[in-house]
Length: 88
Image (cartoon, rainbow, N blue to C red; front, side, top):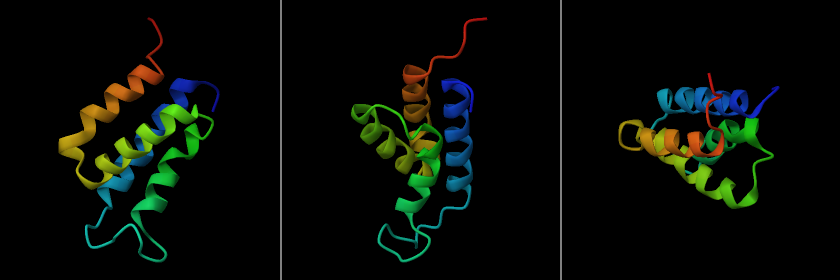
């Protein structure tokens, strides 16, 4: 990744895929495939994000995975706050 915007674009793409394949029967504590692993996978592109933002981002990603319709705007607003789109 060359810039912050591309990193957050990757995070959003991964979150969309995780939400698409989310199964409510899978709990956070399941062995193998679980929500915690999905969230960690989504956050890989922005692993160097400041600690104070990482927790809030982790929660937002988890919410979008489990209920995209209710929480996608929250995640998008936070991503724009952290990595505003480049000026045109």
